[in-house]
Image (tube, rainbow, N blue to C red; front, side, top):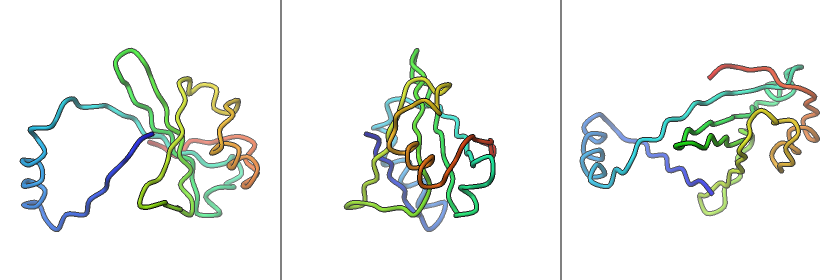
Length: 115
């Protein structure tokens, strides 16, 4: 499970203070690439939704997390995200998120919106 914390800081000074407080705990930088997708007939964007793929390069293993950015429902401030190891087989993956994209939104194929 991935836990992502988002903070809204009032200014650059608050950012610098937080950075100095957290820097002793920094272990490694993780590089990621984000790609956003819509259905080939705009099935997602027409409903203010998009599919988000987040690729992480962790040593020798490439991971891709699939997120459906729709009407967010959080439980105690936590959202769970499913991941898979082979991003090339996106349409073949049995994932709750991808099932929802196909069934609820009727997506038959994807087009890239950029990264």
